[in-house]
Length: 377
Ligand code: UGA
Image: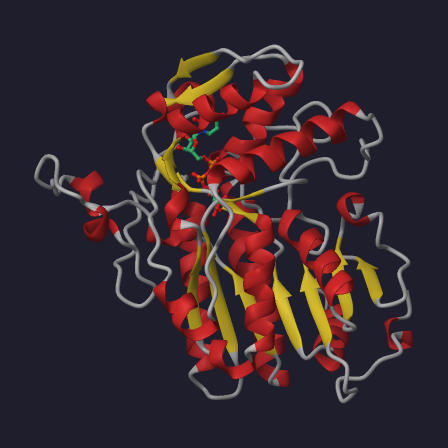
């Protein structure tokens, strides 16, 4: 592809949004959301296109099917785009033990090239980091709170104040979070030169249509928990609860994330040089309860209600797995600066998501060969 043929310039009055990792879960929603709700143009880069096949070819969408870290791609992105979203990432916990070198490459070595390109061109970088940079909570390390006490304020994860607590270096689970953390520090250092505006997002378990893949149907390996449970529904297999399903997560619906992205883009400099937790704190649940809720929902469809089965982390993920026990975000900053909060309840998010998975994968028209594994968020 001759990239110099892309017909718009950074100086054009209409905005041009770059999306690295546009073929992944978040990226594909973002491209569609921008095209459907604005008159802006999107330049998307990804090696895979299965999740965006419906918009490839649209006039305001330039799709570059390539690695986003090549010199020519980076030069074109930074020459044309007003803002670049950085989404490409290996981000499934099952990968952290199995292929830690690739995980670090994908979450540090590669995106740092994009940071350098944005720095050189003074382009606004919106980087999707992870809530996993917070790591474990103090409680997991032996700090105990009084029984019956409402511990939520002790657990509250604050962008600019909380400690980032990783497990030991020989626990490969932390390869991903450590790489993400170092990249955050690199971006902040680059931003402090005053040459590059940046925004760092820390996602809290985004869920919705088209998340990850269904093993054996359009991908291989172990996806994140929601897709694991959807796989169980579709294949009429048990939902596996790792280590009793005690860990807690705040599941955030993808449409709320899109609202966050729009609030960020429309508020211009208010989001510059800030880190934001992007999460639905009110949706906090244990994984055990998530499984029960999905089981209840399944009973309203004409499918076999899945059994819930217990399994140890080692058996499920292999040696080297470790876990974040709880991720509970303070979302006050996003509210104060961007007037954003996640509005979709867990129940609504699960209803919409289950419905989509059942319709999509039962219709048999999903792109089975479009993507072999989940490489991008
Ligand atoms: C993952 C990634 O590491 C982060 O990049 C990402 O930010 C985060 O997902 C996210 O989606 O925001 P984690 O929440 O640990 O982190 O990933 P999941 O695979 O969704 O696991 C959540 C919990 O469910 C874990 O405790 C896991 O052990 C458990 N689980 C997973 C099950 O009980 N059963 C399963 O079938 C799969």
